[in-house]
Length: 582
Image (cartoon, rainbow, N blue to C red; front, side, top):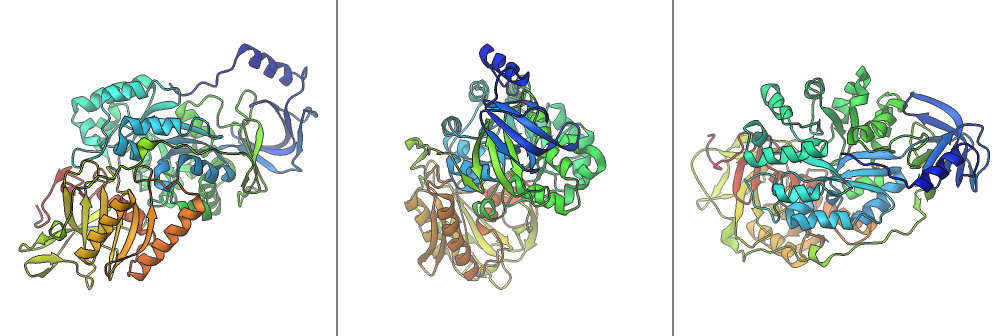
């Protein structure tokens, strides 16, 4: 039922005595322009901290063991990301903390759905253990759909009994995004069991792209409380009217802020928070995290105070995170000091009453976590050239059409190129072969399809990051290059690769569950930059080709996707033949 900010009797006594002026506090922030997220005001005050807790805000406070003179700089609560998959950053949880803390993020809610799809319950254990000693508040939601559907093969599976155990952990807040909305609407027994467990815990996060009318009502009748998949204002308003908490997503693959920002301007901001969902490492470095969303919101003419409320107290209230999201007596001393409220450039970050970041630098040591169980997870049956052959048929084929900056796709009927009774990639019309290779149990399953929008003129790209089951996905012009790309990922035990004319021209190893690197952020960025440059040289027209590629195997997201079991009609939730419009 959320998170309770626990204190001993002696801690509580000391907080009260410091707040009353009878004892000295540990830190005083003097001459601060404080953003009050309760009243919507900005005013000058002094902020007194005792240990890890704010005990008072008043100009009457003058002394403490340590005094930080701010000279009128702005102070806001630590920022909260309402929904993120750390794995999508391709860096470890410790490295993720190093990346976002200097940006002012002090709390994140992590759905470890990706690593759970690879390792099952042990993936959740990894998420909890790898974050328990980090100087950032990391809460989890229990991944509800592992695998996401029965239209693919994942490495892990979480049943109701597993979730019941996971939900007892004090840092697990509730049930994570319930992607199997047909299972809710048509009352699948296993889904109903999970709904009951989530309701006992207090809330269930939603995942309902495009859901409307009776379908939406039936979905919400199951107890779902939020959604981060809205892509239009009308969709968000319908869900808001039905009682949903709306998480405006602005990530690397899906960007919905511009479309949804009017929902905040219309006065409904108390029911809105911000989420990144999936954030690319280069974007973390160059643009930022939640601070980037705040900057974008302000540049669109929105009130800084309302934006800050969405990034702090609104998220804390939705998740029932006691003591989070505000600067007030009894609240956790997680505070961001800013030079102004327009560029949102972070000067310092106070975490649990201590300055841990200054001028974009981390001032504390953050230890890495290693778990041998999370390594060597790529297991693929032997592959040969025949695995990539698509026999020709008469008529048009269903082609997965990319939509820029969206993870949804379109089904486009196109006539493929045929050579020697086989479908081959057609660079003139930008119809490329796509394959998904099962990599968890060496089953030999390989799904084959076609996609348009990448623009490759040569070579192949491949990745072991393929939402949500994270099988190996590859797109290419030549079968031989696609095969080599897959073989290279097997050899690396996870990662991303670009191949041309039988040679690997760029690669990024991802040894942690085939999803995350064990290297520093900058090193990952450098390797990704080489991959992006290689993809560009191959003719790729997509800004983030490996993120885009990763979402082409995600069957809960409309309209057409590819898994290791074949082409998926993601509207009807069924396997569909490549040829024909049925």
